[in-house]
Every structure is written in C-alpha cells, then in structure tokens.
Length: 379
Image (tube, rainbow, N blue to C red; front, side):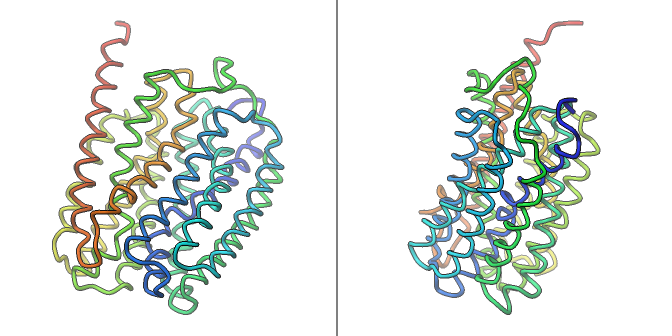
C-alpha cells in the first residue's frame, strides 16, 4: 500500500464503494419483483438495468479522467445521500419513470465506485486489494439477497428491497467520513487522463467478456420459469450464487500474485459456456441452483484479474483506473443487447448472445496476451 495513505483510510475508501455495487447482485430479484407487480414489462427489465449500470459506468469513467482525487470525503457523503434519495424515490415509481430514477442512482453509485477504484489502482498489489473489495461486495450482496429472498420481497415486494438499499446508502456515510480527503499520484506520477491505445484494447476485451455475463444473468428468473420452476427457486439461486461468489473472491484474493490472469479467463469461459448450456435445458431445481452457484463463483473469481489484464497492457495504470467503468458499462450493455432478443415466452436467445460475446472477449484477450509475451524482454 502507498505509505502516504494509512491502511484504516484505505479500508474506508473501499467501504465507500460497497454501496455502489450492492445493486449489481440484486438486479435479478428486484427486476423480477417489479415485473411480478406489473410495474415493469419483460423488455423494460433490461432497459432499467441498463440505465442504472450505464450511468454508473459513465460516472466512474468520467470521474477517473476529469476529476482530481480531492475532496473525497465530501463527494462520498454527497453521493451516498443522493443514492438514498433515489432508492426511496424508486418505491413510488413504475413504468418508464423507473429507468430515469435508476439512471440518477447509477450516477451516484459511479462516484462511490470511483473513490474505491482510485484506492485500488494506487496499491502495490492491486489485484489483492481488488480481491478484498470484491469479497466485501460479495458478502454484502449475499446478506441482502438472502434477506430479500427469505423475508423482504415475499412480505414487502420490490419496495422493501429499495428501502433496504436506501438504509445501506445512509450507513455508507460512515466510511465516506473516514476515507482520505485526497489521494497521492498514481505510480509513475501519472495524475490521470486517458489510457494509451493498448490500454483501450484491454478495456474493450474487459467490456466484451464482461457483457456476456451481464446479458445472461439479468434474465435468471425467466430461465427458471421456462424450466417450469418458481420465482422462489430463482431467488434461492441468486443467494446461493452470491454465497459462491464469496468463495470465489476469497480464493482469488488468496491466489493474487500467484496465478496469471490469462488462464483464469480461459477456464472461466469454459465453465460459463457449460452453465449456460444447462440454462437452455429444463433443469430440475437442484441442478438449476447448482449451475447458477457455479456461475457466481466464476464471476467473482475472475473479478480481481481484470486489473492485471489492464496493467499488462498499460503499465501507467490509467487503464486500470477504468476497469470498473468498463465492467459496469458491459453490465449495462449486456441486457441492452438482449433487449430485442427476449420475449415474454422465450429468453433462450440471450444465452447464444452471451456465448458469442464470451468467445469474442477471450479472443481479444488472447491477442493482447500474445503481444505482451512477444514484447517481453528475454532474460
């Protein structure tokens, strides 16, 4: 860790970002609940999720390029309050008002994530700190998803979920107040700015690969219903996947610095393709839940390795500062690309889209890694 930032403040900075990504693991049950309450149509599910995630990504990316890392306490507290307000406003909305409100929520979440990513990019072992961050995100998502599935959504519907998220945003005022007010320069005295061409290609690879899971995961409840299962089974599959994500992110943290990023993505692609093939069939409930659990484990295991992918392509770490934005934009683009493929009766075409994106992203990664190996000086 950079000695100019005490560890306590570094942990607080990561804590600020937890609320930014809490929603990412809860979109499927929340969108499903809104659809069950006839507040969203099947096509509006993807649009609403895309609005929030894309605005989060754009806010994170723009802040990384334009904003100086100063007045971080004020920004973190203001964004937390704004997020809580958007969550409460969601409880009174339906139809086309929901994408607009969730877009404003995404902008607030993007600023919170920018604070966390800025800390990660300034560490000596960013993949390990990214692992700590993703583990915290997975634990928070697991607790909330379990509560949503077992109590909140069955009793209070989607509004109960958004009230819980508003409460979490208000609790986020504490780490925002404890975070540093200013960050030191990036390694190599890089003060920010846009990445070089190779860095943009690494971000493109991240975008394409990550968008595959974003397209597939948002329609989890639809796969369950088409397999003859119930919404309760889909919600159970969500929190089981989040429990697996804790295991995946913990394993990634432990292995950070010991395994290379490229084999991780190659294995992840093979496992995801297997899971999605299962979703295209009428799996019984235990296998459906297990398959989604494996998908969750893979999703969080690969999470920290997007950072070393970006650093290998761009040692200035300016691309690394944008990995969160690339992932979020991909998470938004995935459902948006699936917008015209899914119908109220059939969501399986999304699985084919996900497979094509996954293979495309891995192909770009293969080219990038091969170029880096060829350019590496011989010992």
